Amino acid sequence: MSARESTNGLIGPLWIENLANGGKGIARDNGRVIFVANAFPGDLVLCRVTNAKKNYAEAEVVDLLQLSPQRRIPPCPVAEECGGCQWQQLPYTEQLKWKQQLFSDTLIRKLRIDPQLIRQIAPSPDEFGYRSRVQVKCHLAPDGFVTGFFRPRSRFVVAVDSCPLMPPHLNQLLRRLREPIASSRFVDKIPQIDLATGYDDRSRAVVHYLGTEKAAISEMLLPVAERFDFDLVIQCGRKESLSTVRGSGELKISVDQPDLLLTYAAGGFAQINLLQNRKLVEAVMAAAECKGDEQVLDLYCGMGNFSLPLARRAAQVTGVEDFAPSIEMARRNARANDIANVDFQVCSAEQVLLNSSTKFDLLVLDPPRAGAFAVVKQLLKRPIRRVAYVSCDPQTLARDLQVLLHGGYRLVSSQAFDMFPQTHHVESLTVLEKQL
Image (tube, rainbow, N blue to C red; front, side, top):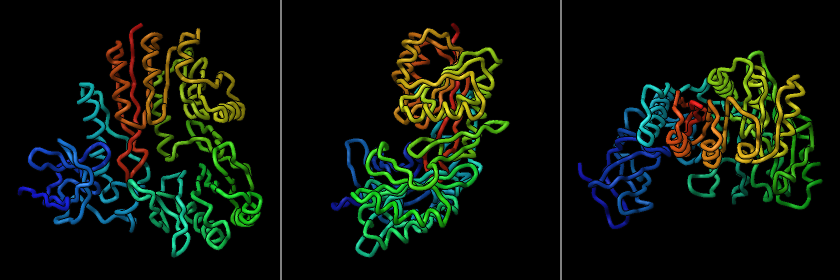
């Protein structure tokens, strides 16, 4: 069936043939690739072009002419509007299949990796209710105070009464905060509420406040926090403005066996899928192959998620992070768990490789989405025999791996971890070696 494009930008009918990195459906029209949001393989769609280029176009669905047999009815009633999820319409087995295929295709196409070295994706223990942290957007609409998430590519807040990705007690906490805020004089000065929970279901709320009456809003919300027993923090701008109103504002996660309890503060970082994080830490420990005499370097170490389990297995671990509060928390976590063979430093990742005189046996790095390009270039000058690279973006991972593979490293294995069910995102662990 051939597609026709109208003068008002409509194009179709189009069959969706595949999925692209980024989660959009792929259709073809006379050789031109059309990337269609909220469309899945097997759909027949009528689209509106939103961004036309010479060889491709981006489009949105105007009408679903025929539904793919792969589709399901999404559990969330606003899944089609909300930007938090892209793949709720796919059964979880299909999500895993596509994540595995897209991750593998990226490494094979860009790096010519042997498919035998790419392991099967590690599924999340929970498909829903897995998010231990969430940023809820707020807006005072004409018909009242709205809490939810941005619509894709916009600042419009889609109202969400109960998010299926959040555990029930965080959904309940949001409702308990929403009611007093909606009836207060501060309602138009609260753009966001950050909710988080620890391994023991202890909860924290960080209320972002743009006004000048910090003491007054704290006084208003304190009885709510006391009644429902959660930690309350007010943030007025950057992280430096965080002010704890009730509790310590600190939460704990659990990793390794026997359990290590790691604390992180408001403004700090922990993986959003705590059960899957345990799996990832276990995989990193297996990849490290420590025998007890290794010198280990952990870059972007945060509050010690990998550093402290590694310190149980190696001679010495050096953890590096450029965010000073995270390093202070990592040091606290080491003391709390009686781990002495670890040294945490505040500095940039690439500076350590340039300036350290230590001969490291293992490098673990877990950079942000932008990757670790500067670090891998330094690795060519000061190579480390074994590297365990944890990534949250297959594209920047492939870019960085290309440098290492051309520089004499050998890829041992690579595996995706589904840290974010209902979305197209994946975490991954790639292990490399170099003969020194």
